[in-house]
Image (cartoon, rainbow, N blue to C red; front, side, top):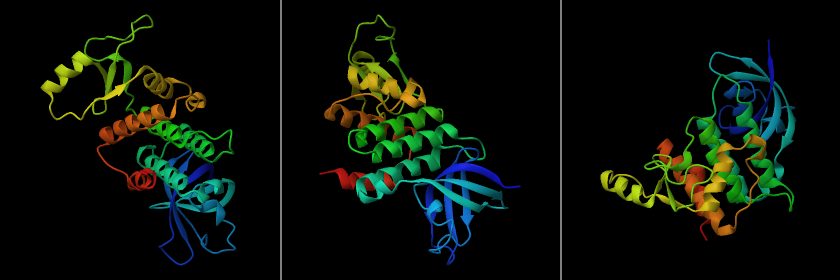
Length: 264
């Protein structure tokens, strides 16, 4: 019996066969799945628009031996507005690549799907409702990591406990991407002397640290909503990216390409 679920198409491969479309989809009920849509590359196919990259669709899936078969597909939203801007398109593809690596398989992934849909919405929203691209990027990177078991410890210095608690005096803290923790200057110095292979820690000022805590700890429906200046947003994006890359110990082609577009 077919399973009907909502899904975001996070990858498509049209180089196999003449008419079929092979896709990877982030689904609400099954997480990340590989699927094929017969005849979806034909212009008149009813499944064509619903199985394109960055299409949010209702899919009817039948489990096959190696992949799912898309029996029918209906588009719920196609993020056309992102396709007119190469930077936004590339950033959206980066989010999809991250989801393909981090989202679960063969188990529900509703929160992962919601996070990506919200990210694409805020990237392509009309002026006045659109969020800065670096803000959306930082939220997706850090929130995806927290959802997959890589939540950083942002409470205070991991060495001496300085800066923890609601009445603690604010002190300079530094985020160590490989460990996912904060250190005060003295603990960082001692730690760095013992572990010379550690990557450099990144200073986390009060505003940046507050933003990281908001992203990691707030309810999903609120995690995108905070305000930072342009310089702080660039710093936040650098910190969340460094944390993700250090923890996963791998790179992403879409991220590399995004940087070639934005390094002016």
